[in-house]
Image 1: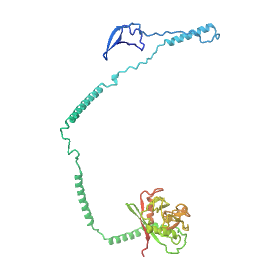
Image 2: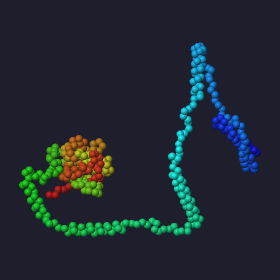
Image 3: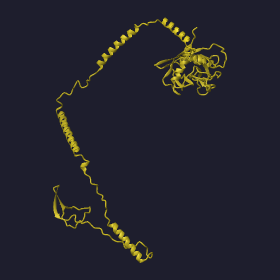
Image 4: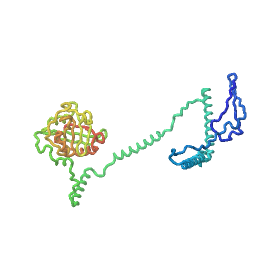
Length: 404
């Protein structure tokens, strides 16, 4: 079977473009499921694919309606309109759509392309050699031992560091022995006598009174403030208790001693004192401070959750509030924190100053009599409001007995 295929041109070409050119006719012959194509040449007629030229055709339909203008005006307007269309039809563009002339060698660096080609050739060459080596290893099973006992060894500086540490230890021991064997040139007795002599000399030389030795403690300042009982006299001996505070596993902060007003609020005092002593398995020991409001109060006593949302009393989960006879008239006042509606448990607060807004809302049951400066330390560990900056706990607590 012979199939004749003629090559035709779809895109129009300029006039006389194909004059003198040759066209091709392809003859494909199929023999025994094999295809063989022979190309035969023959002349093509020169006018076969000549480009069709467009001609201008003037319009004969006027732009005015019949009877709207005179015949002379109508013909003149039609002639002017056709002249304008003829100019538009035969207009020649001043700018073509061809790409701007550009020298590609100004943008394409031949030397770089050549260097990249050479580099790729070298990489390809090495990859081929690597594939040959891998193939050789796979076929022969590896003739070289691949075990290297020193592959994971490294040089360590620990030996030198160990020798240096031994030298430092020897030097520290020498310093320690010299410190232990050191003796003061003055005995303690002579130092105390000399200090008394210096104080007397200060008092004799100074024109003004020497007040640096007459410093008033925080406990004396609190004693000078109004009484929380409003001047009411005690009707019975009042028990004492103490609380010791520390930054957990870091630093001891100090002890504060409190006087408990058992004659005014016996139920509240009994609950607090029992929790301090650890009766019935309930104790304040180890419980954290969960809130510090600077210049106002320190809140603690949550022995179950430690975040101000728990607590437990010796009478149960809660017990009703007792009375509000005692007031928050000074710093160092002990009062119970209200839980729910008119109930208390183990949570309590220590005021840092006079807080009248707590009167009638928190049951006052005691005041600090010693160690008020430690409350200032606790205040310094607090933020503006909320939990302290570090984990402060009650490290120890119990009943306090005066030594007579």
